[in-house]
Image (cartoon, rainbow, N blue to C red; front, side):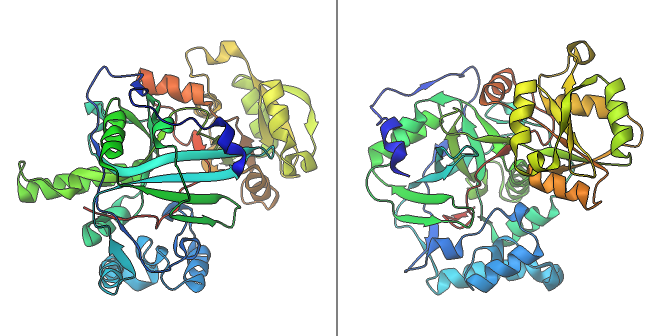
Length: 427
């Protein structure tokens, strides 16, 4: 992945500047991290984010390494109501026996994920892990970028209460230009590994006082936008409020902050995919007719099933300015929105689909990323139809962030996902 060297620019004092600084800004601080000690291979003991792991995946991770972070980050439901206390006991035991060790001094952690995009071109995401001061959305420091779907928060809240630790980071986007240059790594990483999806992960600890101060000041010079981890963010707010009620308003608490990966909001570092829709309650043919009445026109010939499987349907959608309806035979029909039908609706496929489906009786929606997974679900009869959406652009995310508007739920899928287990934080 050495192709990145030519485009990297080293930080120079004074380069970073905020692009949006009209209101309160968040504090971002180094902290004494808790990390895997000894010679643990982070490729073996880290895990994907908890919300993309099913029971089989969890079992496979535990079978691969009996010290994998998933053991306490995603407690086994088979352990019943005591599973959160068991997770906390495991986390404490691993700290006691040296599996996990605390940093001797506060630090930030530079985190780089390098991969190849759908066209085979080298790509990366470079961010910085630190402690971000919590604030509510209406306070203007941390801004959600899309609406959230109803989801039980008791699991994450029960785990947070039991462990009093941030076990995985939320992902936020900084509106401050120059952050990427400031955190550009030098030298060999402290750890490096490649995951099963062929994403190369690498981390560097930052301990130099001057650089720590510069990073804090840069992130703190403008608001940040939550990209991924909205539910953990909301859960952390609830946990903070509980602890404040117990300790009093003037007592400093670790729960006033949460672990966050901060990435500059720029297309150099962000790679956004769409989250598609599975539709139940209407046969694909009936849904196609309903969408025609709701403001979409069929364009071009039917896209063959093998073109959907191979992913070329996405290029056809981009060229035609259309989304696509997947039928039970695996083929797809391109649907172009009529501008007049969506006056006043955000220029996003997710917004147009939500607007159209709201007027169609019987349509029930589920969310699924991955064209192949959508097609497979429809072909197997697990959904009546699929709707493939075009992704939001970084420019659209920037515009929404600056306007304070939120995108519809499940608009963006940021790829790749940071691993759980790089660093943990007491709170």
